[in-house]
Each structure stands twice: as C-alpha cells, then as structure tokens.
Image (tube, rainbow, N blue to C red):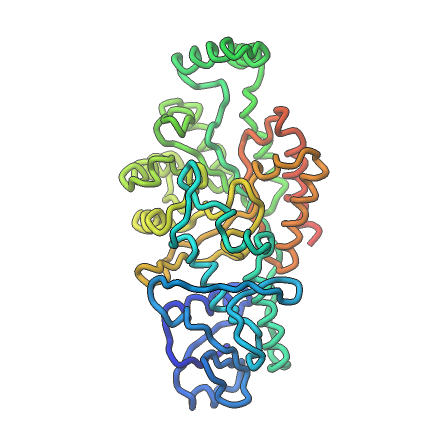
Length: 433
C-alpha cells in the first residue's frame, strides 16, 4: 500500500490519487495528515504537500487539489522528456511537475466548465482544449505521467513488487440508423424516393427499389458481419441503439417495427447493448428515462451503458441525469472530428462533480478515435497510419483503446471503402501486444 502524507485530505486529492495510483498503476493508496503515522509506515510512501518533511520521497503540491469550485487558473504548458505537462513545482520535488493537480484538471474536465464557444450542436470543441492548443491531444498524458511516477517509486522502493496491466480494446458500434431504406414506413419511403428524384440520384433510387423488393440487402444492414467479427474477438463489442422518437436530428427506425426490435435482441445475444440517447433526451431527463425504459424492455435487463447522439456532452447536467437514472457507464467523452484523448487518458475514470465536490459512481470511458475523423485522410494508407499512431500510444502505456465506428461504416459505400480493413486491424492489435 502507498501511504500519502498531506497537510489536508480533500475529495479532489483522494479522487485523483486513486485514479493515478490504483486504476492506472494498480497500487492501493491511503492518506494521512499525521507525521508519526507516515514515518512509521514501512512500505511505499510519498509526502504531497508544500514543503518536504525531510529526505522522504516528496512531491510539491499545487493548490488546485485543496480548493473548491472554479478559479482563474494560469496554466503554462512545458516540455517534459517525450511529453508535456503543467503546474511546474521546481527541482526539489521528486517530479518537476505536479502530475496529480494536472491530472485532476484534465479528468474533471475543468476547462469545459469555463466559458467557451460551442459548435453548431452545442459541443465543446477540440480546438478549445488545452491539449489541442499545446500539441498533446494525441498522447494519453495522464497514463504517461503515472508511469513516470512509478519510476520514482521504483527508485525509492526497489524491493516493492509492482503489478502490470495489459493492453486491451473496447470497440464501440454506434447505430443511429439501423437501415438506410428498409422499415422506414410509407411516408418516409415515398419521401425518400422523391428526394432521390429531385436530387437526380438514379443509382440510389435503383438500389432503394431493389432493397424494398427484397432483391438486395440494405446497405446499412452490416449486423451479420459484426456478429462474425465479434466471434473472432475476445473483447465484447459495445453496440448502442437509438430508440428515440423521429426528429430533425434523430432518424432511426420506429420501435413499432418488429424487425428492429428483433435486431436489437439478436445483437444482445452476442454484444453488450447500450442506449444511444437521442438529441432531445440530452436536455430532458423524462425523455431519457423513457428511452432507457424502451431499451430495457427489449433487452430484458437493466441498462448499464449509454452514449449520446452527436457525441454531445454538456457537463455536469447530462452526467447527473445518468447517475439519477442509475446508468453505470458513459461512452460519449471524445471528439468526433479529432483523434486523441479528450480527458488525457486511456484509462476509464469516475466522473468528478466539481460543483458538488464529490466523486460520483458514473464510470467514464473516453473514446480516442471516431470513424469520421479518419475521413480527413484521402488514402487508406494515411488512414491506417493515423489509426496506428493513436493505437500505439495506448499500447505504450498498456491502456484500453476505445474506437467508435457506425454500422454503416462497414456498408462498402464509396466514402467508407477500406474501413472494414481498419476495423480488422484494431481487432488484430490485441494479438500483437
């Protein structure tokens, strides 16, 4: 056990030390404000305060972990070996930066509580993040810092036997629209056909007719392929279905369609099924509660995982709603158009509510790449290289890689050519670690 001596034990301090030490490094941690208890401790120990007690392993603390609420924090990002960090604390500390204060800033999404300009869908953008501005968005810096801290502990306590974790993947399949042509109802089908005519899309109209006449498979119906991929992969796919009402933003199949319900039930036999919360459910807990009930009725079990339509995430209100409805895990944290680590980590973490200064039971799994972000690359080779770059960053720290793909990504449509190959390379990456 690692014992932390500090001048004040706060919820923030306990939260971030448990994340870095226990969740990432696998080291149990305890805290004390009593010097005598700290001195008597015979195993791993670190003092985390403003002044060293003596010649112990000492990390100089920044004030952020002892504060409450938000404040105007001045942050200066600096180079540190092969990465970057902030909250410099001088050369008398075992680490030149307060990695725990910096980790809390990123994990709590402190910057997302501060005033910022939202995009068209009301989202916090990558361009506004400290990670993007200072060039470390594509590094899981918290995990990197944790391993630097581990090296310090190994130097001070060479006899201690540290545990190791292993690289893994958590593939996410998003289903905002299960079928492109099928099961849309008479009005939507007629409207879609007229739209094809107005936009002069004879090829699409032809394919629509073949699908509706059962002469061809719907292009978005890639679920048998996904089931076969799941059988090859030891990690369970997480598949999120949109079951909300038809709106301007959400256009999935009506839940009255038996084939749609049957599809969800079938996928639940092979994958872990979650709720893709509709756009309007993100601001209305009653709508969210209704959608949760719908999916639970179909899968005949309590809903544990969710992610949001358009990957929209308003903190802290949305996460509080998930907690109220006893949803255990969220997979929304990430950027749709940029590859990288929105929360600075490839390790799941509990949501910390800054307003209430409490660690909540909601487990956040940030995703690191979405299929749309790879469309910025013209060639398949460039797509694969960018995918490999971020995947290898996760491998270096034995983290968990979370990619987000959609059911239509595997349709073979022109813009998605080669994406099956990219997905396969993710599945196969666990065999090479």
